[in-house]
Image (tube, rainbow, N blue to C red; front, top):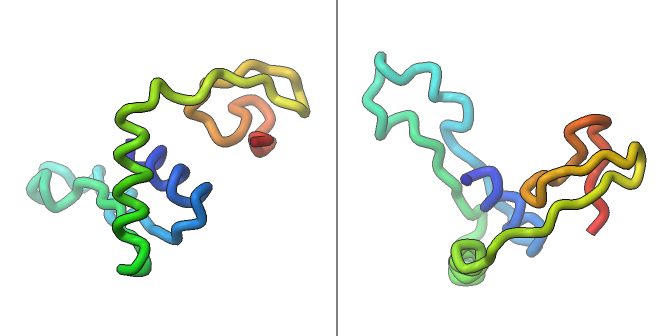
Length: 91
């Protein structure tokens, strides 16, 4: 879900980053709250627009499934690149 939110923000032109993206392997050694992924907006002035963008994801039924232009394979609407050939999705 965090990666999907990051993709939506990036499509909206909002610079952001995920903290603790690869920290889940430390769960057990660290408290779960210390390894949860966090989505951070790089510029404070983009915060409200980011909030609106993420809130719209909650209401959206999601992007429709799509076929890769390179290999023709079907992909879930949540994928930004083809699972088969790694070609970027054409919006």
